[in-house]
Length: 339
Image (cartoon, rainbow, N blue to C red; front, side, top):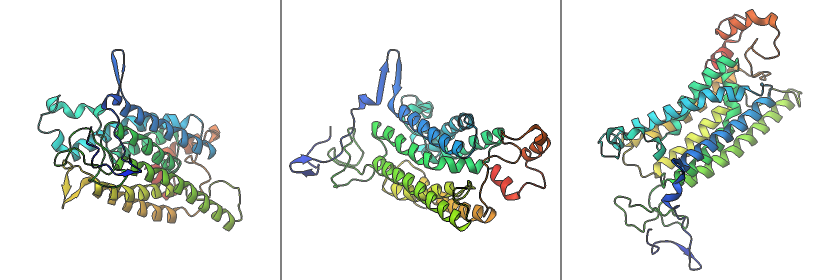
């Protein structure tokens, strides 16, 4: 354990955050080893699925559609998240000095998946799932946005269990103790608990998104004299756009505090900060463009002709819509459905 000498104290008691015993990071169940990091990720996925399900069903989606789409999004999200992490931390895997040599990159249970990679892979999975279900891509994304932040907050507990995702040294009362040696720093050094900062930022983001969504919906309903009618507010992908802006802003300043010398850099700026800037820019552009394309309320989360309530007489139109063609379909709607 690090020395207690450098730990801030209040009333004679240390106020720093202790790291968990490394033995707690793995649960031994007979011949099986269950990593708490993985359990935190699964808990976050389950929470996001539940939140998205409730929001989609409230907007008219079939109860089973959320899980159908999640089954595509989660595997692709995990795979691309790992690929992104490895590509931006090549120094950790290219020297062959780990327990598995040059196959060290396979050991995903030791940590090392990137949220931006998960977003890219998950978006591909959602696009595939939505195309199969006839659901609008951006409708699913809007329903998912608060759940994504909640899931990311839960997932950061896994980083805490693995004693990773910490920042520069600090003398603040909530400094994080690290049990293992950190190169270049004395054993009693305390570090910024970035996992905790991001948890709090994400939970605050959940509240902000929901409050802004409610306020915008009520204002739009009053303007249209349509109080209580469905489809008003931050729809057509605009709530997800705010998610990108919120998370990108938070992640950019968190990454600036991070101690991660193996992260690839360009112009002296870590890769994840550049990606955060891109996320913010995409969010702003998406909010503006989708708002101009769709000033009208979003009355259905399904593409035309694909709603479960559609009768069989609409089948020919269904085929045209799913192919992304058809003069009666709004061009902006088609581009949103394609992701």
